[in-house]
Image (tube, rainbow, N blue to C red; front, side, top):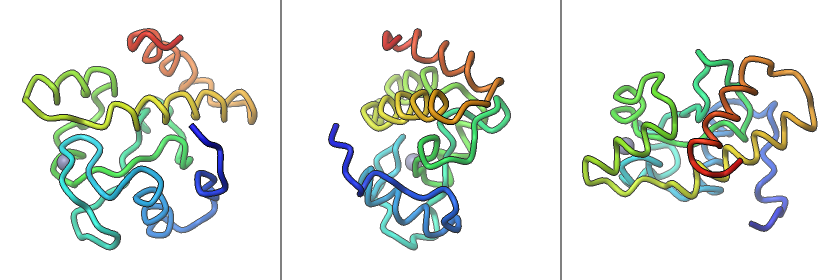
Length: 132
Ligand SMILES: [Zn+2]
Protein backbone atom coordinates (compact mmCIF):
# COMPACT_ATOMS: atom_id res chain seq x y z
CA UNK A 1 0.00 0.00 0.00
CA UNK A 2 1.64 3.23 -1.13
CA UNK A 3 1.54 6.05 1.40
CA UNK A 4 1.11 8.87 -1.11
CA UNK A 5 -0.35 12.26 -0.30
CA UNK A 6 -3.54 11.02 -1.92
CA UNK A 7 -4.13 8.90 1.18
CA UNK A 8 -3.70 11.75 3.61
CA UNK A 9 -7.13 13.24 4.13
CA UNK A 10 -7.10 16.14 6.60
CA UNK A 11 -9.33 15.53 9.62
CA UNK A 12 -10.46 19.14 9.68
CA UNK A 13 -12.05 18.96 6.22
CA UNK A 14 -15.83 19.39 6.28
CA UNK A 15 -17.81 16.16 6.12
CA UNK A 16 -18.85 16.47 2.45
CA UNK A 17 -15.27 17.17 1.37
CA UNK A 18 -13.99 14.23 3.44
CA UNK A 19 -16.56 11.97 1.79
CA UNK A 20 -15.46 13.12 -1.68
CA UNK A 21 -11.82 12.39 -0.82
CA UNK A 22 -12.73 9.00 0.64
CA UNK A 23 -14.48 8.06 -2.63
CA UNK A 24 -11.28 8.98 -4.48
CA UNK A 25 -9.17 6.99 -2.01
CA UNK A 26 -11.25 3.79 -1.86
CA UNK A 27 -13.18 3.78 -5.14
CA UNK A 28 -16.57 5.29 -5.94
CA UNK A 29 -18.76 2.54 -4.53
CA UNK A 30 -20.37 1.29 -1.36
CA UNK A 31 -17.80 -0.72 0.66
CA UNK A 32 -20.44 -3.32 1.52
CA UNK A 33 -22.65 -3.87 -1.56
CA UNK A 34 -20.35 -2.29 -4.21
CA UNK A 35 -23.14 -0.13 -5.53
CA UNK A 36 -21.61 2.75 -7.56
CA UNK A 37 -21.57 5.99 -5.55
CA UNK A 38 -20.24 8.97 -7.44
CA UNK A 39 -19.19 12.11 -5.64
CA UNK A 40 -22.25 14.03 -4.47
CA UNK A 41 -24.55 10.99 -4.81
CA UNK A 42 -27.49 11.46 -2.48
CA UNK A 43 -27.14 7.90 -1.18
CA UNK A 44 -23.44 8.19 -0.26
CA UNK A 45 -22.83 8.28 3.48
CA UNK A 46 -19.84 8.28 5.80
CA UNK A 47 -19.50 4.90 7.47
CA UNK A 48 -17.37 4.44 10.60
CA UNK A 49 -15.43 1.18 10.45
CA UNK A 50 -15.12 1.09 14.25
CA UNK A 51 -18.61 2.30 15.19
CA UNK A 52 -18.84 5.61 17.03
CA UNK A 53 -20.79 3.75 19.73
CA UNK A 54 -17.65 1.63 20.31
CA UNK A 55 -15.44 4.69 20.56
CA UNK A 56 -14.45 4.86 16.89
CA UNK A 57 -13.08 8.35 16.12
CA UNK A 58 -14.32 10.61 13.31
CA UNK A 59 -10.94 10.36 11.58
CA UNK A 60 -10.50 9.63 7.87
CA UNK A 61 -8.64 6.42 8.84
CA UNK A 62 -11.89 5.19 10.41
CA UNK A 63 -14.19 6.46 7.67
CA UNK A 64 -15.26 4.69 4.49
CA UNK A 65 -18.19 5.26 2.15
CA UNK A 66 -21.35 3.17 2.28
CA UNK A 67 -24.75 3.59 0.70
CA UNK A 68 -27.47 4.69 3.12
CA UNK A 69 -29.22 1.31 2.98
CA UNK A 70 -26.08 -0.59 3.98
CA UNK A 71 -25.14 2.01 6.60
CA UNK A 72 -28.58 1.63 8.19
CA UNK A 73 -28.64 -2.17 7.86
CA UNK A 74 -25.24 -2.57 9.50
CA UNK A 75 -26.03 -0.33 12.45
CA UNK A 76 -23.37 -0.93 15.13
CA UNK A 77 -22.38 -4.40 13.92
CA UNK A 78 -18.64 -5.05 14.15
CA UNK A 79 -16.83 -4.73 10.81
CA UNK A 80 -15.47 -8.31 10.80
CA UNK A 81 -18.96 -9.71 11.48
CA UNK A 82 -20.57 -7.44 8.89
CA UNK A 83 -18.08 -8.48 6.19
CA UNK A 84 -19.03 -12.09 6.90
CA UNK A 85 -22.75 -11.23 6.86
CA UNK A 86 -22.42 -9.45 3.50
CA UNK A 87 -20.53 -12.38 2.00
CA UNK A 88 -23.15 -14.81 3.35
CA UNK A 89 -25.73 -12.79 1.42
CA UNK A 90 -23.74 -13.21 -1.79
CA UNK A 91 -22.22 -9.71 -1.82
CA UNK A 92 -18.54 -9.04 -2.44
CA UNK A 93 -17.76 -6.33 0.11
CA UNK A 94 -14.48 -4.40 -0.03
CA UNK A 95 -12.65 -6.50 2.56
CA UNK A 96 -9.40 -4.90 1.34
CA UNK A 97 -10.66 -1.39 2.17
CA UNK A 98 -11.82 -2.46 5.64
CA UNK A 99 -8.48 -4.16 6.37
CA UNK A 100 -6.50 -1.08 5.31
CA UNK A 101 -8.80 1.10 7.42
CA UNK A 102 -8.31 -1.05 10.54
CA UNK A 103 -4.52 -1.13 10.11
CA UNK A 104 -4.28 2.62 9.43
CA UNK A 105 -6.51 3.39 12.37
CA UNK A 106 -4.28 1.30 14.63
CA UNK A 107 -1.22 3.18 13.34
CA UNK A 108 -2.96 6.55 13.80
CA UNK A 109 -3.91 5.70 17.39
CA UNK A 110 -0.34 4.60 18.12
CA UNK A 111 0.87 7.91 16.72
CA UNK A 112 -1.68 10.24 18.32
CA UNK A 113 -2.56 8.37 21.50
CA UNK A 114 -5.92 8.38 23.28
CA UNK A 115 -8.92 6.41 21.97
CA UNK A 116 -9.01 4.12 25.01
CA UNK A 117 -12.36 2.62 24.08
CA UNK A 118 -11.50 2.02 20.44
CA UNK A 119 -8.15 0.31 21.15
CA UNK A 120 -9.34 -3.03 22.58
CA UNK A 121 -12.22 -3.17 20.12
CA UNK A 122 -9.85 -2.60 17.21
CA UNK A 123 -7.41 -5.21 18.55
CA UNK A 124 -10.29 -7.71 18.77
CA UNK A 125 -11.34 -7.04 15.18
CA UNK A 126 -7.78 -7.43 13.89
CA UNK A 127 -7.43 -10.70 15.81
CA UNK A 128 -10.71 -11.97 14.45
CA UNK A 129 -9.54 -11.20 10.91
CA UNK A 130 -6.17 -12.83 11.48
CA UNK A 131 -4.29 -9.53 11.26
CA UNK A 132 -2.82 -9.02 14.73
ZN1 LIG B 1 -24.42 -0.58 0.01
